[in-house]
Amino acid sequence: MPVRNVNYSIFSCGNGNEKHEILFLEIWTNGSLTPKEALYEASRNLIDLFLPFLHAEEEGTGFEENKNRFTPPLFTFQKRLTALTLRSR
Image (cartoon, rainbow, N blue to C red; front, side, top):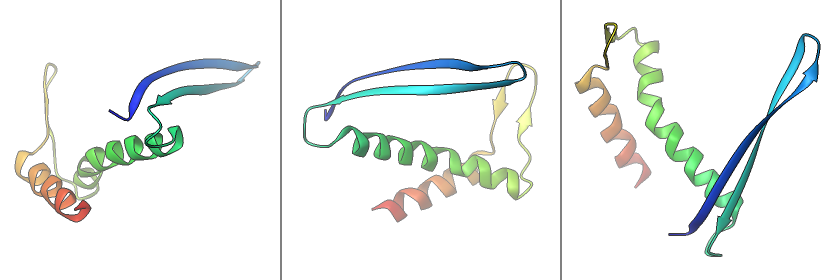
């Protein structure tokens, strides 16, 4: 595995009504890629995983929802996931 260890911390700062949060990431790699490249690849993968949900909402595809469960429409999600997988190859 190229990534050996990852740590994160979140710091809140600011005064009064203006507060900011700062995310600090520490990424250690085995040298086969830089920490910046590892972060880029990880964020790209997360974006690709969440895109189908964004598009489903834009198209007005309703999600079945109740208090205990959240189920996205399977065929729409699977079709988009397959398209993304094929496009990335």
